Image 1: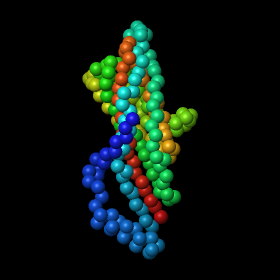
Image 2: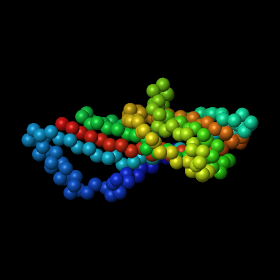
Image 3: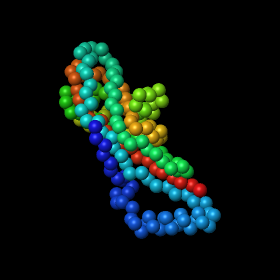
Image 4: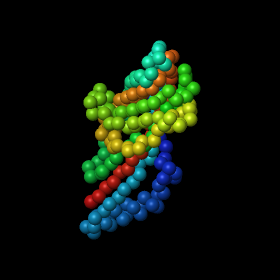
Length: 193
């Protein structure tokens, strides 16, 4: 498994030292003068990629019609430890599946659901994506799903590992297939005093 980071499309360049200095100066002046201070910053996008996620074929899948299967993978990361007073959110913005072996496209996927939970405690899973295929969609080796209503998954980043569970339903292939899955997270941090 590989974790990639990339900058948000809103900030293609890193913050400039002058701008950071001015923000720090304004924050210090406002707090010393007893004024209310509110600061908000975008978190650079983070991508979690699982390469080579293997799915078993369904021998008579075509004859059965729509069937479903579940596959999981875990990811270790440093626990996110934020200081008191910060309001933060981390949301899954997009999920992509890329065909690698055994399939040429994802036209067989009718429904897909991806959740994230604490590794070992899936009782409180957060739904990252809930996808239903558009019948007019053209077959493609990459299935890109944009989160319609992203939910805050911050609590799942406060642990040292996470469990991602993917439920796939449709007329599943009769033979084994392999795909890469990438989840793109974004968020913001705010402080108010």
